Length: 400
Image (cartoon, rainbow, N blue to C red; front, side, top):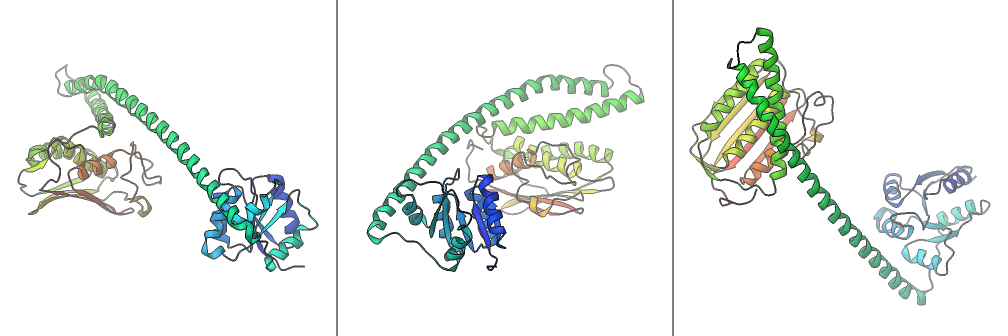
């Protein structure tokens, strides 16, 4: 019985896969199967096989290209790679050797000879191209690779153009839909406020409680629509930079959030420095603070705590939003600012959202020349820190 080896077989035909596994498995070898080139490359990295069999006609990254890529990996420099294929055209063997193969086995596979052939290649057998033929064959192979690359570039360019058009149509649809939803929602919120203020007649306690639930739901829907509208306008929106007194809009926002925090049984603590006027877009920054405070409240628990702090420094303004909520896993910290990304875990799944809030936060802050960072510990809470420079590199009217 020969010494057992790990053999990687890159082949998309299931019948051939099973045949080689049975023949070589009977010799004690372990045969790993990859159905395409990229999978084969990944398995080769993981398993460090003693020999690699490659079908030259696999789809996508074909056997020639896969072999060239395998041969470029330093730890596979001495690993025998053998083409095993039904391609019997003249020059196929030479092309396989030029691409980096050490041998060539024609299909249909001779099951009686295959174990011996494998043993010979593992033992050091190498097939080569005659020296006079090597240079022209190598040039032809390089030309083929370049032509294949050019074709792939053309296909990717066409696909990219199609994706851009689809993205434009999607954005147009979402923008239209958002505007259409906003119109009836405005009337709905208006009448809910009138009922709540008693301007349309007295309400019983039960009716008032139901109205408060409707108010919260309408506010949540309005926030989602505002985020969606802002995202769609993000490419054409311009910063309306002007001297901004933060207290003029932060105080009303904090009063609103304080009421929501009391209903949720969460303590909202505020620390505000007296901040000199800042060159900024007030509407955009209000959306930032609203999103951060909304998240801090949404992901918190009754009895929890939120700290909203604004610190005035000589060259910058620092805003910190700290909560004692469910926290964010480490592996998600680099992704939470991506559009539509939501933490897929039991921590965040119960909370509704569209994954736009933090993407908008980062976009607005970076458009002001600032930066936003986050620290978080699961089940202990998160801290979002915003740094806004006083000197804007962008001029008024620069695009967001």
